[in-house]
Amino acid sequence: MIDVHCHILPGLDDGAQDLSDSLRMAKQAVEQGIDTIVATPHHLNNQYENPKQVILNKVDGLNQLLKAEKIDVKIVPGQEVRIHGEMVEGFAKEEILPINGSQYVLVEFSSSHVPRYAERLFYDLQVNGLIPIIVHPERNQEIIERPDILYQFVKKGAISQVTAASITGDFGKKIRQFTLKLIEANLTHLVASDAHNTTNRGFKLRDAYDVIEAKYGSEMVYLLLENAALIVDGLHVYKEIPERIKKKKFFKIF
Figure (tube, one colour):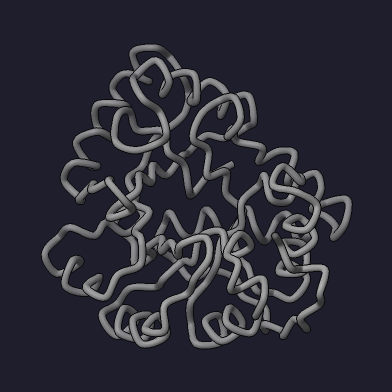
C-alpha cells in the first residue's frame, strides 16, 4: 500500500518533530500495510518553508535510518504546497517539488477559502506539465458549501485526494458524509493518511479502505490503491466521469 500524503520528515512542520517521531510513524505505517510513503511537508503554509532540496536531503537521511533500523518502508519525496500565485515560477526555480519527480503536485487550500485565481493557476500548471492534486477538499468550507467548485476543477484536469480519517469519521459525521459523496460522484481519485503523528493524526488507511470496500466494493478499493501507485510512478491515473453534487443544508459545518 502507498500513502501519497504524510508528514513524516522530522523537524520541518507540524508533523514529526524529531527522528524518534519519524520512526514511530514508520512502524505504525508498516502495521497498516504501507510499504511506500510520500513525504509531503508543508511549503509556504504559515511559518513553514520547505523547498525542494531541503526535502530531498531529509528523505535521504530518513531512508538510511529506516534501513539501519530494519523498518521495511520506503520514503519518497513530495511536498504539500499552499496555493499561491507564483507556483509556476516556484517550479521553474526548483522550489516546488512534485511527487517523486513526477508531474503530480499536491496543492492545499486554506480550510475556509478557494482563491478566485485557482482555476487559472491550475490551467497554467497543466500548460507547464504539472497536474494539481487538490488535497483534502472535503475539509474546505467553500467546497462543502459549493461542491461545483471541485467539479469544475476535476472536469478541467485536476485530481483530488481525500483523507483517510475523513472517511472513518474522525473529523465528524458531516465531513464523513461529504467525503463519501465525493467518492460516489467521482470527484476524488486518491485516499491518503495526511498523518502527522501516531496519536491523534495517525494513518487510518486500512480502516478507510475497509469502509470503502463495505460501501462500494473491492473494485473501488483497487482503483484507489492503483491510483496511488500510478501517481508515484508518474503515470496516468484512472478517472471516471465526474458528477455534480447538489448542495444540501446538512453539509454546512459550523
